Length: 224
Image 1 (cartoon, helix red, strand yellow):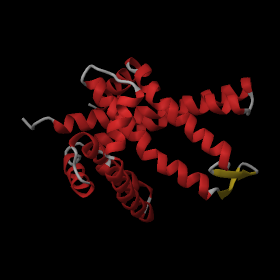
Image 2: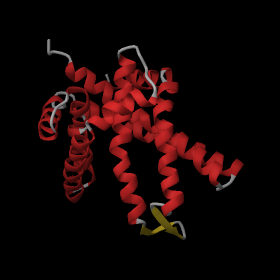
Image 3: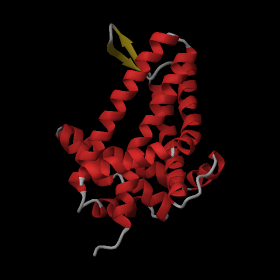
Image 4: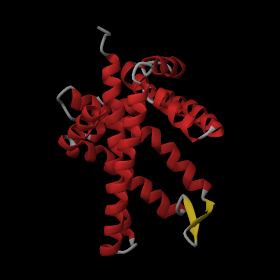
């Protein structure tokens, strides 16, 4: 089953690269513009983290729920056979933004508590709650109800979901790192190279959104 889900996810992602790129590219460039303006989120010294730019980091984190919501809306439109433009995906995301911000905040607290326990519990908590933004945006549920519903819906498929999320994340990370390195070698570390690398990383990152969407869709089907 794991192999089947893995193939389904990448097949769906590959078939719909264009509409996904359409909604993810503006946010990737916006995040990059924020870091050009306020400085990088992480300041390195001798290839190690020296400090964190709080202003840049907070603004990027605030944009993340909106960016994810736009991707979720596009995935729902694609599933219905009608991919839409950025504005059509942005409207429902903005409408539900306060609830989404609250949902991501509560998810962040839960995952952070998992980190305090150990690395694996944090991943497990994320896997159990990752349906919540989909419930908020596509089922119009309030944050606490969405989190509880997500936890219940992920019960039966928690281990396949966790494994697939880790697998697709690692694949996307490795491919993104390889392409970014190649871009750096060809274009250097200028604005053009940084923007192109950010676009590649953002598009590959949508594989994780597709993975969650696939499992969420299965969770909506009535049990036989």
